[in-house]
Length: 236
Ligand code: SF4
Ligand code: SF4
Ligand code: FES
Image (cartoon, rainbow, N blue to C red):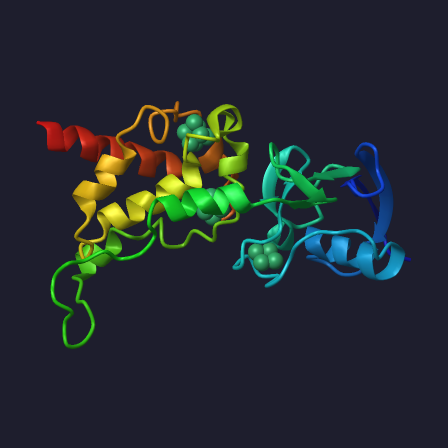
């Protein structure tokens, strides 16, 4: 008989529940290498079809299944069940408005992403073919283009918890730096002007929760420091 894994999952249906509660489940460890998302799927398909959570790719690419797992944010689909302390406590991403169970409202997070204008801006005439970039300049984008916008970093940032209405948070700032660093982009000055703000950028206090929680092992803290350095550099 398979080993049983114990989980406690945050439940809340705003249409019927007065307040959230934790529900216990047991899931058989059917095969080695099972991930947390496999356990959630098992519960949904075999025990309680009302359990609600987002997922899509199952491979750490789409960024939709960010949860708080035993107190640390991560992606369900790439978190192995084995090794997690039981009962495994699964909650929605912290500080977010819960739509239902593990589903949170990401509207504000994506609004902040839009604010940094995540697209190439250029006034130069369009080249006949593609916009060329040297291998060295392309390498400067390593460590930022891989971001899958899962929100694990931003929702683990205490500065964003307190000032998320104005502080852009690590995910949006990592992406802001991705465009600042891009040799093909011609709006660096405007991008820096937008970020030179006591709240949007400077509310980062280098606590580094963001870096520790990123499932893609990216370093938003360094990206934020790079932006601050670029702002200082253009003053001297
Ligand atoms: S930096 Fe990492 S944790 Fe933050 S949104 Fe991107 S992939 Fe997710
Ligand atoms: S380093 Fe900055 S952005 Fe990252 S968690 Fe700390 S305060 Fe937030
Ligand atoms: S389901 Fe796509 S990242 Fe986990």
